[in-house]
Structures are given as C-alpha cells and as structure tokens.
Image 1 (spheres, rainbow, N blue to C red):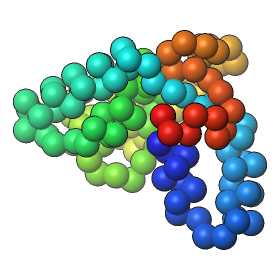
Image 2 (image 1 turned 60 degrees about the vertical axis):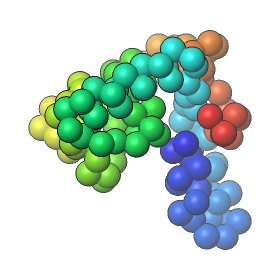
Image 3 (image 1 turned 30 degrees about the vertical axis):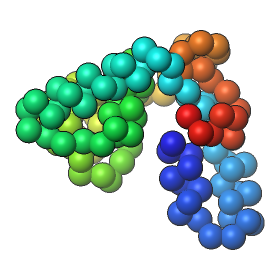
Image 4 (image 1 turned 90 degrees about the horizontal axis):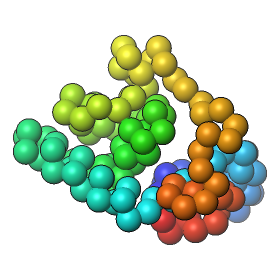
Length: 124
C-alpha cells in the first residue's frame, strides 16, 4: 500500500525506476488474516473513542504494533489514532526518540507479514 502511494506521486518512468531501485533494499511486508483482524480492532477502538481512521490507516498501524516499528507520516489522522491505540509515530516525543530498524532476520521470511521483494505482491 505504501509503495503504491509513493510510486503514484512520481511522474515519468525514469523517476519510477530510480525510486523502485532505491526502495528495493527495504522489506516488503504483506498482512495475513490475523493482521486484518487486528487492524479491524484498531479501527473499532478508535471509532468507539470518537476518532475516525480509514481501513488502510488501521492496516498500516498493525505492523507498527506487531513489530515495534515507527510509522513515518505527515498524515494527521495517525496523530489522532496514536492517542487511542499504542504504536510508534515519528514526530511524537516518544517516536522521535525511538526510531527502530529491526535487526536482520527479526522479521519473518514466510507466513504473516512476509518479507518479499519490492514489487512482489504489491496489491497487498
């Protein structure tokens, strides 16, 4: 989802190719059924507390919780969500102090949130 959003923001095939090459070093995470179920609960918790977040936003929060990752965004919806559910958000006092890159091998290589190539399964 994030890869698609980034690529949509660039014009021309040359820019796209350069961006894909640079992003190829990053892990590609794909959610499984349990992740979707947990994301639904994240969205429901926020909604019960008066905060509306999108389905995709909840699904982006889920791996941050699961793998203790920090979400880097300028989207203010995530700031509101971070007041209702626990996850690391860059730009908050806590998130700014603890940007964490998982050590090699700490993310699963198969199964839930599998680590794959940069464009593999880009439909999520």
